[in-house]
Image 1: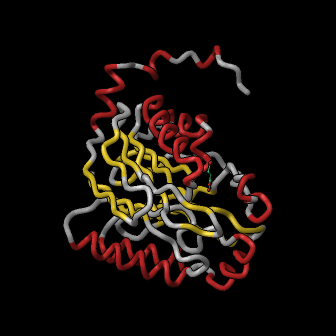
Image 2 (image 1 turned 30 degrees about the vertical axis):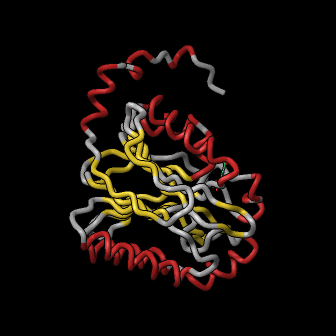
Length: 264
Ligand SMILES: O=C(O)CCC(=O)C(=O)O
């Protein structure tokens, strides 16, 4: 399975501009050969323009969903469309969107863990449903959003549902870059899954972002790490059969004793 992850610099509060950037990027990537899955970062249509978000997304309505569906159909490619600010009945959610090659929406996930350091709970609603596994091209996968990476329960739950690859879409800051790298590696090793991440670069409102989007094998090896500060595309082939082999070699899932673990 070939994955292309777009470590982009997001134009703040400008969904039209960002969709244009993504359309150009997708055209370029899909022209240069066979890609199975495109991956975008967290909040890629607006960035963290929280105080003006409501105004922006009310006006933008469902244009991002329509755009992603059209893009997937045009290039016959699966899209893990990072996350975007989705205006819903009771507020705005930080929502990830997964669309298949036919442009059909197959999965959404609303970020459950809102970030106090960003004042996210003031502006956004937290997701009310746990992460669910989804399938692309018959392969089981999961997605988490940025701060979710700090909560091992979520990735473990996706792995227990059968996910063999976890997408981590983010706007992770440079100030905590060490946590970003080590936590991704830990989630890969402990769950014996591929981790494919897509972080943004650039700065917004005085925050510098960490880049370093990664692909990590289920053994924990770094297959690719993007630069810390430049726009870049990760374009790698991954072998999902490795998951089974590694789980046979170190049978962590068979050794679990869930009945002995505390529930909280
Ligand atoms: O957990 C962190 O340090 C960063 C989280 C974050 O920036 C986010 O979830 O958008």
